[in-house]
Length: 94
Image (cartoon, rainbow, N blue to C red):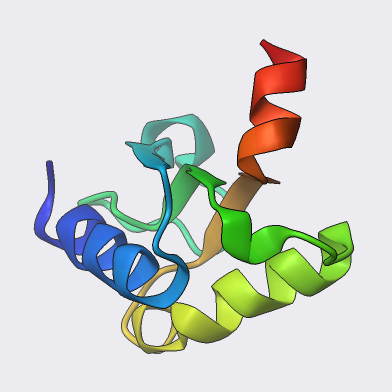
């Protein structure tokens, strides 16, 4: 796991006390696109399963994650693909 991904994981665990966090660097899929850097670590797919999302809309969940990761965005993170679920929603989707 990259240093950025590890920092992101720590922030998400601290902010949302999740049951699960999965982070995948997808920067290679965005080579040549806006925000892509030669070394990667700019585009990530993130899944967080947390009871903290209960009662929140998809937009509210996304805003909360973006706010928690603001420091990463200011240091080179360009884009996130998010899947943000409560444990009940994750169980239903399985």
